[in-house]
Amino acid sequence: MKKLYKIIFFLLIICLNTYSQTQEAIIYFKDGDSIEGFASLKFNKIKFKVAQEDKPDIWDDEFVKKIAFLDFGAARTFEYVKLNSLDKPKLIEIITKGEATLYKKLGSDYNLLDQIYNPHDGYPKITGANLNPAGINSAPQQVAEYYYLKKPKDKYPTCLNCGVINAWRKNTSKFFADCDFIVKKLKGDKWVFEDIEEIVEFYNDICLGE
Image (tube, rainbow, N blue to C red):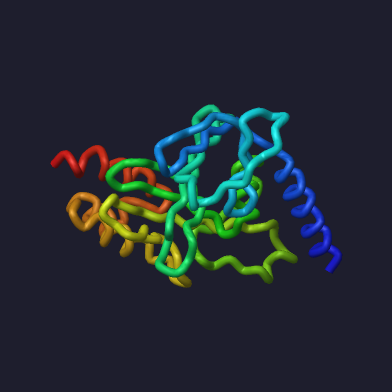
């Protein structure tokens, strides 16, 4: 039980530190305008200010399309995406942009914040929906990563590895059914889940040129 309290206390400290941090960013509005400034994320909302000394304004999906953080060597962009017909749009990271766009969503808003401000490989990652809260006493925090694919014509993105059973091969093959090469490689187990970014880039760069 003491271990559990220690872990909760540790996570709380990190989370509190995260809220106070801002990074250089560009916020993009739905009307086409964009503004450079400083931003941080508070769950599914964006705290944004033009200058460090300013008081931040709170923005959400009503007016904002996406936000790009610039302090990581290369920009990391998070876009509001409606994942299904029931939920409000979620702020998720763009991994690869193109005719097929690959997104990554972490299992909770806390993990989203931690990913932005404290990127590290210290926590084990799981790529399905098998997050086991009971394991908190015996292992470090696990970070569930869910990957989504979307084409411009799609109303909602396709989750590749959601659900109790990780059926990413089946879901990916169905999504890329118009590219025989990708389907054959997936059926032949030539690609593993960690190759998903490569698969999407192959589709955008090669398959669409066929």
